[in-house]
Image (tube, rainbow, N blue to C red; front, top):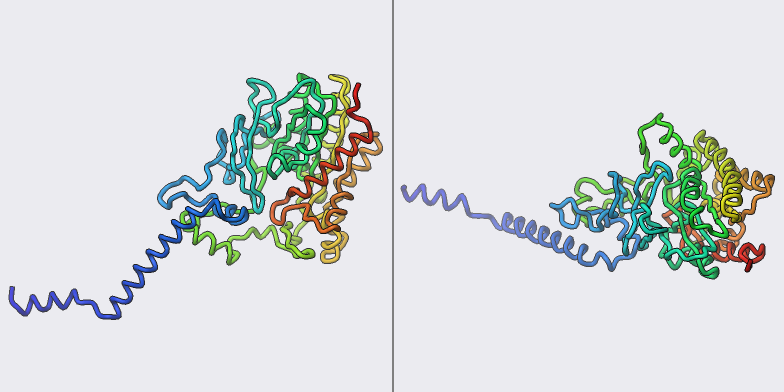
Length: 409
């Protein structure tokens, strides 16, 4: 090879100063990016719950399919938010995996741990309760508002029921009135509680419709998602890299258009978009059906618990976040907006009154707490926060004592 050819090859591999600076910058950016990703993962448990909620489904390492927080043990269907420990049950609609220990749940700005016990040895489901004791004084049924989107000790059921000695929380997230009544029929007669407390929340309306449709065979069993996490499942680069996920959320990308953040007083709350009827509105046929089923099953449950094991039934109506913040929201959106949300609860109250049911409407107490400056509900998650659970626990306990529902026989 000639000297001329060698010189030409040498010149080919000579980088200009600008090129050197460029490649150095790329290397620095790459190393910084890797370090940021490593640090974000290492510091994951130090972040506030709201930030962890945005990151918990990001992959533990980019080339793996395993998320930062593993799915709930025993979950038997591919749900994008399967970190909530759901299992499908044809009779009770859903059940929770048994024998969970310290399982983490992230839900918007709510974060809590779940331990579950069985109501009796060999029962298929797990419940977020202390172990059952006999004779049993109180058994509580309901959906996720009864299961509680808080730590166990902050749950309203734990707080009010502890004063009565033996109790059991049979709340199951994702269920409607139909599934909850199926569970009452299944586990209440063998355990014979003296008092059955049944909590109702407005999303039970549509859940009851969906459950009945699933059982009827007119739709594939389990054809809908029971709850929608406020933190959407990441995809693409945001599923692999925490920094990309945080930037995406900070810029408001991929926000659910069905919801909006609204300022009320000194805080912001997430509510369904006002561009269409509220999910709890009776303008939806599914909700009207669910209201009819709730009325029917409340009557049936009272007769069932009295005649089968001699218990009393107490119904607790838990209002929506929008109703608790009605004063601020009605000033912005109008009273018709609030009335459409509260219509089902108001109709239930009228029905329960007419039939002589024992019931508690929690709205006045929760609204009073909001007026005192308490948060009551999470900002993003749609459920009672620890302060709201305290208010509800006090309300239920005072009613039980006032009415002597658990006085010494």
